[in-house]
Length: 325
Image (cartoon, rainbow, N blue to C red; front, top):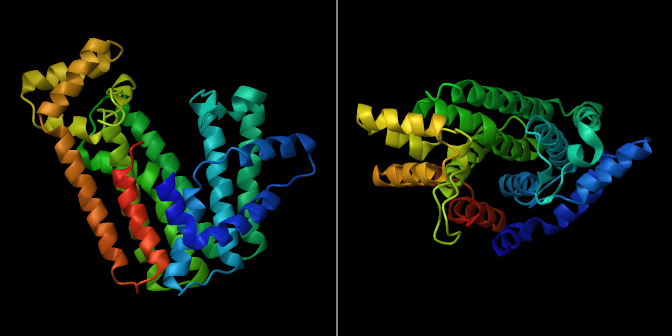
């Protein structure tokens, strides 16, 4: 967490004020809803999304933020929280960041309704303040996240994901939300400027690198110890595996697909798949791709003048690919 605290430092004041505003933006006349939203707010994670919004807005405007920036960050967080609440229902998950999920404590029906409520709160916060440009950025992200999830489900059934389709899935599922945070940060202070698209691309690149790093964790890490193989058990086609498939003989390919499809619960077989992917250079290939995204993200930052906000964003880009979990 030390690196995160360092990244957060230049926007610490804004983040504190944001927390107050965010909590207010959730309030309702229904006691049950307030109890649940209170539970949600007190179990927040690293808060990377609002951090991106504030750091970007301050970098592109020489240290300025305004009410639109706070509202934009709140809307992103409201809508993102809504999607997480719904995700837990979809995945039938009882835990979120080590705490009980809403559906585990209050059942699916209430969880879906709370998700809908948070979504509508986010929409109204933008509409009531005529922040239609910001609302558009967020709405596109939500649409793409849903499409990415569905594309992954569709492809997972047949295990025929090409590298291009994989990039499209992770762009939509993971990168699009970080891209929305960054473009929204720029749009809140410099609407209709080149910064909005530049920062959208910057966020997208970070998101792509972030997801590939996550895929690599599945193959183990010296710091963590044993490889997990969770993605293989869930029949997820990730970049190391796709690359290994592309470089296999027809016989190896058949064995690999059969292993993932029919023997994904067999620990010994999963270990063999992990060893095969490593031997085929799948991990090295994925690491190099991740570094390409990192390099391109850092290049985008070079056009901005030196500032503590720019330093923090550079630190964030490096943290994304160097993190240990």
